[in-house]
Image (tube, rainbow, N blue to C red; front, side, top):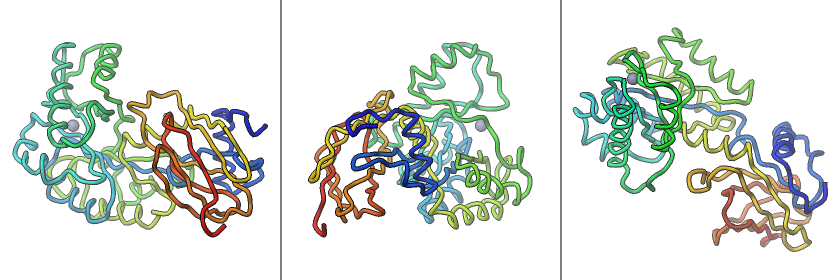
Length: 330
Ligand SMILES: [Zn+2]
C-alpha cells in the first residue's frame, strides 16, 4: 500500500481490529490511518433504551443517568397520558446532555392505514422537536415500534414512512423482565458486549414502578457495572451508535500528503453528511520524533500527545481535510 493509496473499508476494518488488539504491525508508515471500531477506541457499546415516557423515567431514570453522566434513549409518546401528565418536565426540565428522545408514535394506539401511520410519526417527531428547539431539523431520530397494538401497514410502506420522517428503526425489542428475569442475566449483557466487541442493549419500561417493571436494584446494578467498565464501554444513544457504525463501515481515508512536517488526510463515507455527521475516531501513524500533534479540521484544532508513534483524534467524514502537524514539545 503506497502513501497516496486509498485505504479501503475492508482494510480500515482490519486495521481497526489490529489496533484494538495492540498489533502495530498493520501500520505502514506516516499517514497510515485506522478508523477505530468504536468511538475513542472503546472495546464495545451499550445502549439503554426506555419506552412509553413512563413516570419512573421522570422520577428515577433520567435524574440517575444525569447524576452519572450516562446516555439514554427515551422512546416517548407525546400524545399519551403519562407524557401529558409530565409535559413540562419532558419539554423543559429533562432534556440535557446524553438524554435523547426517540419516536414511539404519537399515541401508541397502533396504525392500520398509511395515512394514520404518517400522522402518528409526524406528530411524534413534532413533539420531540418542541423539547429540543436547539437541535437541527431535520436530523436522524430512532424509532421503536409500539408493542401490543394493531400494526397492519405493510412493511414496505412502513419503511417508506420511516425514511420520509428520517426515522431509523431500532434493533428488535428485548428487555427485562420479558427476556431477562434476574440481575445476573441483565449483567451478563455487559460481559457479552465486551467479549464480542459489539453492541448490547436493554429496553426498559418502568424502573421501580409503572409497568413491565425492572426493580430499582437491577437497574442500579447494571449502571454500576457499566460505570465499572467505562474505560472499555461506550454507553451512548441509539442514533449515535447507528451513525458511527454506518459511517465506519463505508469510511475511506485518503492520504493526501505524508511529509516530514505535515500529514494531510481526507476522510469520507458513503453516508449523507447532512445526517451522518458524528465524528469517527482515527488513529494515524506519525514520524517517531513527533511527540505532540496539532490536528486541524474545518478550522478547529486540538493538540494531542502521540503514543507509540500514532496520534488518535476525532474527525467528521465528508467535511474539510484533516491536517496533522508536530506541535510544541517535538
Ligand atoms: Zn411501548
